[in-house]
Image 1 (cartoon, one colour):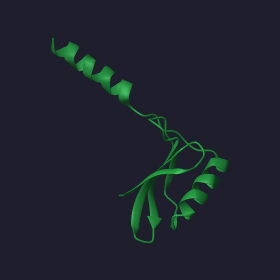
Image 2 (spheres, rainbow, N blue to C red):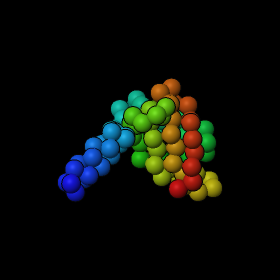
Image 3 (tube, rainbow, N blue to C red):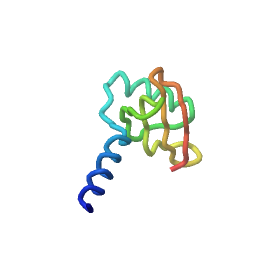
Length: 83
């Protein structure tokens, strides 16, 4: 019974896990341009497949701190959260 519960938990986690991957050079340039408009630069860029976001930026350095961003497929910023 215990192994059945573990298997069900593993299946549930797999179904809700977002898959991230590398961005292309052109995507990275567009992402950087978008966050530059927020007085931010750098960070770790990834593709995102969870919800509306197409791209994610972790640990971008901004004037007032370090932020994480989510962007849509057209490189519009969906969220900006202080890390």
